[in-house]
Length: 327
Image 1 (tube, rainbow, N blue to C red):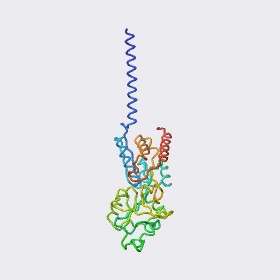
Image 2: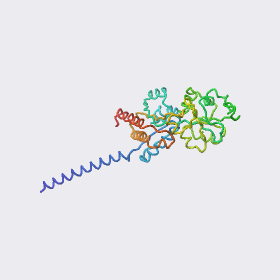
Image 3: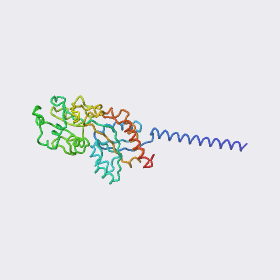
Image 4: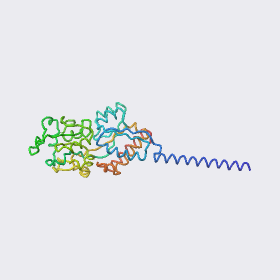
């Protein structure tokens, strides 16, 4: 009788342990899936153009993982690389241009291995005040005449560009040299990287450009598409002449996707490979890449990547995890 009771107790104990193990495994799987215990901080700096995308994705991520702090600073692409990403103060750098070779070299010298992910496309927009009724379309030659280094002190009035335009001072607003937007504009419009007039109002705050142009009939500025689309009732976008077709094309998601708009450009995030060892960073980057076609990018006012690019991003991400041994 005692042997039978002992056997029953042993079986009951084993069943209890098995049940407990299953419950623990189930709990762990649930926590792993839902991120109940995911915590930490994801530090991001860089491009003011990519900033709205990262902020929007960060907000969605925070709803799933409220204990993770996602901090995003708008510093300009170059400023982010130089002051935050390369020194190791940021896990991710938003970028509205590809990383430069000297930045890549400096990062590697500092033990930072950047992984590049293409996250969308922008249609860089030239804006004027809604009361500006004399400028409808500008060619690259016009833009170079206005913004090129030779314009400093020489092209100060609208009439200096075209005698039919007002004999009024032209007040110009744009990004600083720390910005990827500045780099793209000078390289593709002026024709020389970094070549830009000096006598303009430079800022890393795109909303400052919007406000300045919105209140000044004789102002002009340039910035990312999302900021223009968000303020279409306050500023007017100038059409840009396509050098190949001669057609004047307005900036939009559609014209950027089709390739008709000549100032379309790629947008990136650069991730410090070593930072992927941190669960919060790893899960955030994965969430970011998985949601590039969820409507967030387009809703912000940018052009989403293709399914092919999304899959290439995720493969690159998973390959990095394999190399780190943190799959």
